[in-house]
Image (cartoon, rainbow, N blue to C red; front, side, top):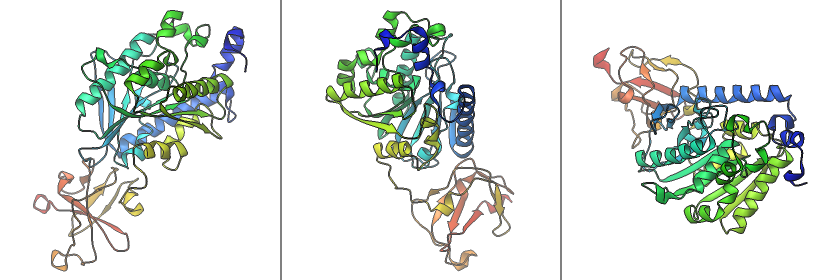
Length: 387
C-alpha cells in the first residue's frame, strides 16, 4: 500500500471512512444499523443484569461510568473497562453496555466509560478522562482479581493511550492484565486533513502527543506484563488494517505480549457488535484472556429467564420479571417431603435483587429456585408471613 503522505484529501477521506467499506449495506445504512444494534444490546444488558448507572469519576458532565455487575459477585472478580468508538465525536456510554451479558453471566464486571466527545471535548481532554476513569475504577474496586481494557475504533485508540500512561503522575499505578484493541487508530496524523478532524481541531503537535504509536517505550514500562490482542476486520479499509498491523508489529518488536486477530467476514461495525454473542470468536478470546472458559455451573434451563412468568408453591407465586439468572447458593440443599415438596428437588439458587414476589412483594433474598432432576425450575417465596 502507498504511504498515506502521498494520498490526496479525497483518498484519505475514503480510507478513513469505515462505513464506505462495508459489504453488507450502504454507508448510511450500516451506521444506522450499528447504532441500533448497540442500543438494543445495551437495553437488553440493562434489563437482565444489575447496574449502577451514571457513577461519577470526575466533576465534568460527561465523566460518568455505567457498571454492569454479576448477580452474585465473589470479592475477586475480573473487571473489563469498555471505551466506545464513534470517531471521538459520536456515541456514548449509553450505547456501550451491549457486550455485558455474556461477560456478566461468567462473573465479570463490565464498566462502560463516558467521555466528552467533540466538539465539547478535545483530544487532550478525552485522553485525560479515560485515564482518570481507570484510576477511579481501581480505587473503587480494589478487590478485583484483574483489570482488563476493551476499546473499539476511537475507543481502541483511547485504550492504547491508557496502556501508554506514565502513572507516576497519578496516585496509583493500575496493574492492567489484558487489553482488547478492536479496529483502532494508533497514529492520528493521517486524519488531520480529513473530515474527522473538523470537530476535533487537532494540530500536528496534538496528534503526535496523542498517538499510541509514538509511545511504545512508555507502554513497555507501564504495561510490560499486559496481554494485548490487536484485532481488525476483514473488511476494514486498507489504511485501518495497516494501522492495526503496524501497531501489532511494533508491539511485538518491543517484546510485548501481543497477538493479532484478523476477523473474517466482518466490517468495522459488526466486528464489535457481535460481542453480544457468547459463541463469537472475539467474545471467546476475551473470556479466555480472563480465564473464563466454560466454567459456568448454571444449567441452560436455569438461564432461560428472558420473559416474566409466575408459578405457585404453597399459594405463593414468585415472578421473574425479567432478571439475571440466579446464582448458586453456598451449598446445595434438599427440600424434603416434610417441607411440602418431593425430595427430588435438589440444588438451591439465590435470586438477584431485580426479582420480586408477585404476592408479598418482599425482597428476593429470602427466595429460592429449586431445580429438579428433570431440569424443570420451580420458583418459591419463603416470606410466607408477609402474604
